[in-house]
Length: 217
Ligand code: ADP
Ligand code: MG
Image (cartoon, rainbow, N blue to C red; front, side, top):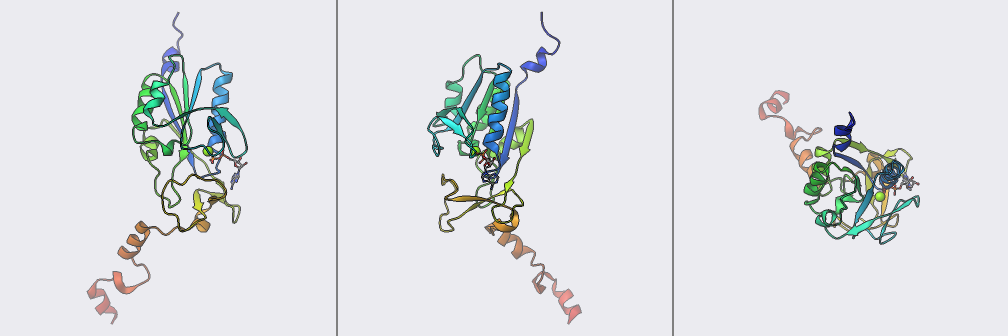
């Protein structure tokens, strides 16, 4: 007999947990995975092969919680490794995947799978990270969480890279390279901000029309 809510149970969903480094994204992903396992749902966990900071095959949080994951070199491998019985797919460090991850996530959800994605929303310059903007947009649920600023203890939404000379977006590291910071103590002046400052020089006469300047003369 078909249960009344079976249609609801079959519906796939996309959840995104994002925020800076040390905000607890991996902890939250593990928490959701464990609850799904308690509900006896078949869960598969994936992570990009690039993230081998702690362990080759485990997803490990900074507080040492861990679950076994399958490292994949590219997003299409997730579909290749999927079991028919899988109800929940969790993907950590999703910002490191190629753009094809967007299609992969869509396909999983269309199959009725609950997809839990965790990843950095911004890189160390504050720019959107890889496929994250599209994932946030398509998600049914988004949780943006904060860490604690290492300077002042305020809620932190930014990831600060300690080495100012390294400019590449992807540089895998830990507390050796990164800190969570609030906006004040991160304060990364990027090119966009310079452009904005150029267009709207708030405290200068440069933004006044010539006639206004004449009036003031
Ligand atoms: P993420 O996956 O977002 O990088 P994790 O889930 O791996 O974060 O780790 C979160 C844990 O990191 C926290 O529960 C705490 O024990 C630890 N931690 C270390 N530094 C900080 C910080 N600056 N702010 C918050 N938590 C921190
Ligand atoms: Mg993490």
